[in-house]
Amino acid sequence: MSEKKQEHEEKVKEPKTSEHKEGRAPLTEWQQLNLEFLKKKKQKEAEKEKQKKEERLEKLARYGKIPPKENIETKEDKKEKVKKKIKKPKKVKVKKGLTKRQRAVIKALPVIIVSFLLFMASLFAISPYSKKKTIIVKGSSHTPSKTVLKEAHIESSDYIFSLLLHPKTYENRLKVANPWVSSAKLSYQFPNYFTLMIKEYSVVGYIQTDTGYQPLLSNGNVVVAAPVSELPEASLTISLTDQKMLKELAKDLLALDKNLRDSIQSISLAGSTSTSDLLILAMRDGNTVRVPLSEMIMKLPYYSKIKDKLTPPAIVDMEVGIYATTSEIEAKQAEKTSDSSETQQTEEATAESQEETGQQ
Image (cartoon, helix red, strand yellow):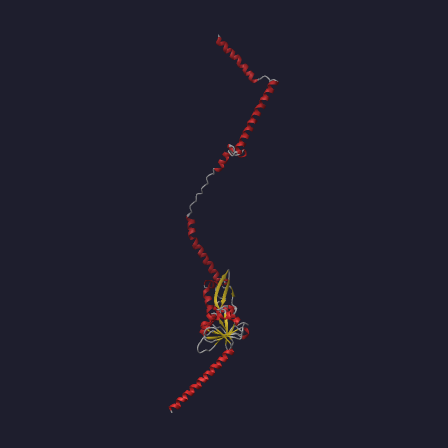
C-alpha cells in the first residue's frame, strides 16, 4: 500500500513541476534589483582582472621579458602566418617531345638560311645596284682624287663585293703607282659607301735642279719637280745629286729635333778631299756649319747649345772636333799657308840647283 501511495505522489508532483517550469511566477522588485547588482559586480570583477593582466604584461614588456601588448599575436594570427609561409608546390611543366616534322625542320634550317642568303646575294649581283658606289678620298694633299682612283685601278664598273672582299689589292696598287703614298686604307660603310684614307710621306727638303725644285720625301725618294712659286717660305733647299747621300740625309734630318731642322736654310756638298761627305749647312741666323753626313746626328745638336754665344756670320767647323771661326780668320790662315808653301817651294828649288852645280 505504501508503494502505491509513493507512485501516486510522484504522479501528482510531475505535472506540478512541469507547470512550474512552463509558467514561472513573476519576480519581485527586490529580486530584480539583486540580479542587476550581481551582474554589475561580475562585470566589475572581470574589468579588474583585465586591468591587472594588462598592467602585468606592460611591466614584463618594460623589462624585455615578453613583447609589448601591441606585438602579442593571437593564435589565429599565428595560424594565418604559418599558412602563408607554407608555399604551395610549383607545378612542374612537363616538356613535350618534338615531333618528327619539327626535328626535320630544325635540321634543315641552316641549309635553308644559307641558300636564302646566296639567292639574295646573286639577285643583288645581277641588279645594277651592285655597281653603284660612292668613294671618298681623304688625306691626299698632293694628288687629286680622280688621279688617286685611277692609280688604284678603281673603276665605276667594279662590283661592290670586289672592293669589299679585296681591299688590300687596291691599296697595294696605289702604293706602287704613287710615290707620295705612305699607307692607304679602304674601308666600307653601309650600304654602298667607301672611304680611301691616305697617309703621305712628309717633305724633308727641295732639291735644286735646272728644271725646278724636286721634293725630297722622308723615305729618301725624289718626286716630280715643282715650280718655284709653289715652294713654301721656310723651305730647305738641297744641292746634292747622289741618291745614296740623299736617302741618308732624309733619314738623318728626320732624326733631328724639329726646331733644329727648321733652322737650316740650305745644304750643299763642301767638296773636301779629306772628308768626301762633308756638308755645308747655311743656317737661317746667318751662321755656317760644316759637318760630315756620317756624323750629323751626333754633332749637329751641339749647335743649339753654342749658337747664342756666336756673333754671326760665324763658321762652326765640326769636321774634326767642334770649334768656331770666321771667314776672315780662315782667309788669313790660307794666306799664311800659301806663303809658307811658296817659300818651301823656293827653298826646294834652290836646294836642287845647288846640288846640280855641285855635281858639275
